[in-house]
Length: 329
Length: 255
Image 1 (tube, rainbow over the protein chains, first blue to last red):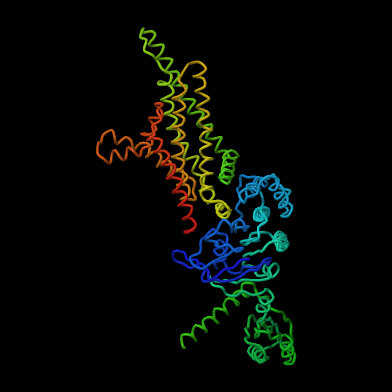
Image 2: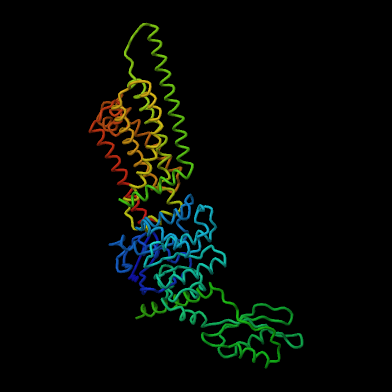
């Protein structure tokens, strides 16, 4: 449905998108993941014909974005980062206007407006001014606007940004619901969002493609290495932190031990393990066999940023290694 | 062109649900009403004076009331037109709705023409006030309606040209006030360029004077449709809208 080849977008001084290639099959729901400024919005703007690419090609539904923009636009529904609403318009008035722009008219238009109002749960604000709507409603009006002409492809730029948790869940459910009928690309910097809604994920960082993978594989990679918080207390009120650290480091599979905190005879360590190794059992055994108390043993919640950095960071390191090898050769 | 009409309707809606249209109508109505009232008073006063002196110069409604008032209207237009055109694209850019227009299956030209047409229609609504006042002249006097009609044509052409320039300027900024102020400055300059012909006879003075809106508007006020003048206005309209479309396209390359 969507095919992007070596897409590049340069601005005066920066390269926002650098040689990105990917394919999206019909009916798929794809997450576009990356930190702010990674080039997500730029890529989406190219796909929607808002920006022309500097080089490379992008095809949507078989039409090239540069050569047949009108055909592409007819088949695309787009929700920019902030919903493109006119504050002085009423909801239905606005949806009718967008519908007409997209080529609907007459009874067809009325039907679609009613349909999207029901679908996006905005039927109760049909006659309200858009400028007076809450952020959640505006976002849903934005979604309604994107699907009004029943497009083949939906492009959603951070559809859940700025919503409260309840609204986020509702929006995600709605997007998942829409997936059957449309091919969807949604961008986000929130990892669980991708986990919950998408089948396929495209990760970009600094304009470069880092990975395209299925969500399941990504999850496996993100959880490959784990870090555990261990709190140890000495039996007789004294515990040498360095001895304990040594002991923990000797456990097989442990890659690094950090002393995080020491209060009297209690010490908290953060233990990082190698990828794919489950070391919690061994850690517990090592502590108990040394005659200490194991006060606490819990997986350190890896923040989403860390997971992301780990993914993008390791890729970058791998890339450098390859480059180094090439330069040696 | 169906899409241009969709855009035009939306723009007119925006003008008339916001206070802009009503504010402009009120201001214009008051200003023109005052001008009309004073013009009629002076006409009546002079008429009585002549009668007392026993002089019987022919007095003409067309020459003494309608002509100067048409000139006045064209000057008031200089103030009204920037207020009408400033929001056309600047507001879309600020709201981010330009992204909606640019990703909808409509041509840039349809968007531009739709917006320009809406602005021109709002200006026509303002002109209705003048027609309302002039109607009294027809009720109580017997002016010639043909020169008046030509005068209206001139006003429309002038407004069309300045609005096209305003539309172009509005694509250059997100800030409506900047767009409005710049449009006003350009319109006023275009209006007074004709003055140089009064003291300078060189070629450049002729050229400058030729670019002046006022130079070309004059013939219409006199009730003459000069082909040359009509072409001038149509050219400015075309150029204004052409530059707007270039500017809209450059938004995509630059943004």
